[in-house]
Amino acid sequence: MPVEIFKEKYTGKVQEVVLGATKEEGGTRAYTVKLGGSSALPFLQFEGESARPVIAMEVWDIKPNWHECFEPYIGDVWEDPVAWAQKLEQEYGAEVIYLTLKGADPERENPKSADDCAKLVKKILENTKAPLMVEGCGNYEKDNEVLQAVAEAAAGENIALGMAEKDNYRSIAAACMMGKHCIIARSPVDINIMKQLNIMILDMGVPADKIINDPLASGLGYGIEYSYSIMERARYGALVGDKMMAFPIVCLAGQEAWRAKEAVAPDDAGPGWGDQKTRGIMWEAMTAAALIQGGADIVLLRHPEAAKLIKEHIEDLMVPNTY
Amino acid sequence: MAFEMIGERINGMFKDIGEAVAKFDPKPIQEWAIKQTEAGAHWLDVNVGPTATDRVKAMRWMVEVIQEVCDTPLCLDSTNYDAIEAGLEVCKKPALINSCPAERPKIERVFPMAKKYGAGIICLTMDKSGIPKSADQRIAFAMELVAAADEFGIPYDMIYIDPLILPCNVAQDHAPEVLETLRQVKTLSDPPPKTTLGLSNVSQNCANRPLINRTYAVMAITCGLDSAIIDVCDDDLVEAIATADMLLNRSIYCDSWVKVFRQR
Image (tube, rainbow over all chains, first blue to last red; front, top):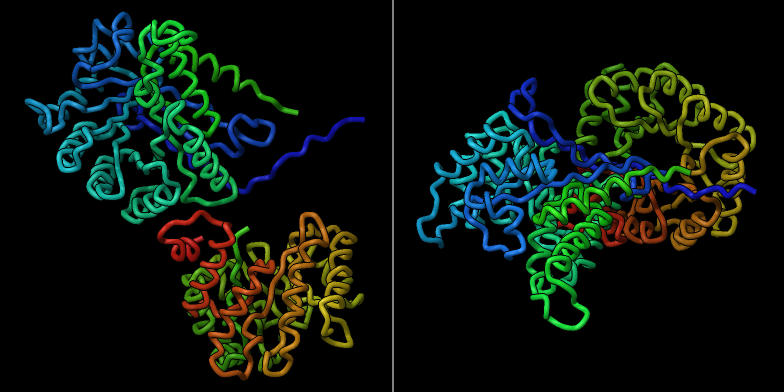
């Protein structure tokens, strides 16, 4: 007797957001990426569309304070953000470049000016092909200035700008609208604030197909279950028609994973812990794997080996499980 | 499923609409169509009222003039099924038929018409002998109507069971029976039929009608009410409904929950 597979029927879907712009679209990117568009829970292809998660990789505008296990991979470029970005897309398979402007932080010695940041963004755009996401330094006042300049410098390229939070979203939203860019809206592991922030950003006049949500997802071992449940609830809300919960989600998996002591503790940390490099890479890959199951549409990765593992994992998951 | 509000105001029983229908003056009808749509109505009830001499012609005309100014789906409200059919012929979006009681000749007239036009049906838990008092008898009628949906090939969730609330100063004992009916209706089929009420009827000729209306709305939503024909311009009522909907965990809380409810 044939078994009839029960299929859930949904009425809603995740909003599609396109990152980047090709020459025809007024930019200079070699390709664009589509985030979102799913009409089912992640990887349940037999119930609807499950969008392929996109891999973004991280570049800083200053030399990063990362673990030494990164050095063999990017040590030759980490003082040159342009070369670093090129290496990520050419050698390590980054589909999107994610630039963090740490150097603009006014708490630092000789902080970079908004103009410096804009120039760097322009230079990266001139020397790379991938769509770009840009995050400010985290200081609200400085970011207002920096992101405004970046939005102008990148006009036409349809980049994503962040982080827009509850208390600073207005100026970032204005910069995004002016340059026709996407906005990354961050909520602190809080589904209610995620929804409210989306409403406020839409009220400002940002089009729905320009909004990306960052739920500030935790890393493995540090509350990832809670982040997972929030993302799952948001996705489920999107599928039953809640348009304010239906924006594609970005998870900063790499930076969260490498904050864990389990990722960076030395080889002799304890019996059964194994060598640090393998452990750290696996910590990042496991974090990202869980978050794409939770509904991440784009994951930000840090270690090239972790990115490689996740890329293979996504290929496996995208084999349709149609019944 | 989020709550559906059916705007009650385009009804010839109201003086301005009655006069507009008599004179074929589209303005008041179009104004109320826009106003109710802006207030968040998901459906607009359309009733030609008692003044129309030719109800078939009036219904068709009302549907046409409303569709000139908004694309909110319509709920065609008449006891004259030819008038409803005339309206369905010109509706651009799938409509609701308001209404059909548990009487075989009427079921045989309405259900095939609903099937033909892809319309939903508001089904009344009554027959020729009137509205029963007990929840059990109401449910018996609801069962007949759900069985008819099956017979005529209408999806269960396009049936809106209306257990018929009466004014609380005339038939106070009906109010809890209606609530019990709402609970039980949800067990009749899978997916269950939807439910609706002509809410304002509960407070007919009573003091402080808005308070009675919104209190009963919240009680009924808790028991399974999915939609109601209401005054969508009564802000307190809509806010109470939005809050009940949110507290039943049907939409994720955010500080602007009332606004989001109206904008769906």
